[in-house]
Image (cartoon, rainbow, N blue to C red):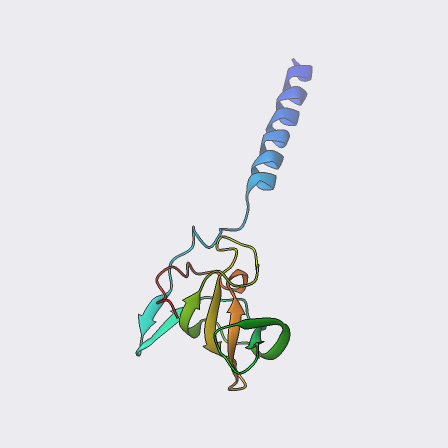
Length: 124
């Protein structure tokens, strides 16, 4: 009888371990969407995320090699989203959001730094 009791404890421990390992952080698609407030779009984001500059004089092309500031605030406001630019990964693998970094510099944040679903943002 004691052997079955030990075996039950081992099975229960294994089931708990599987449940803990199988738990992951929610993806952007599972998170709530960005929302409008005070005439701006707000999204939850990673505090301290870099904001990237643009290529050349055009604001339409994010430059993933040039950081112009950081977004320490959370949530933060965003102007619009753009797809089909430089691979960034995540649920929207080529999406960037246009914003203003905490230092006042305009630029682009990678979609992977935003935990809210960014589909509600208008296209740039």
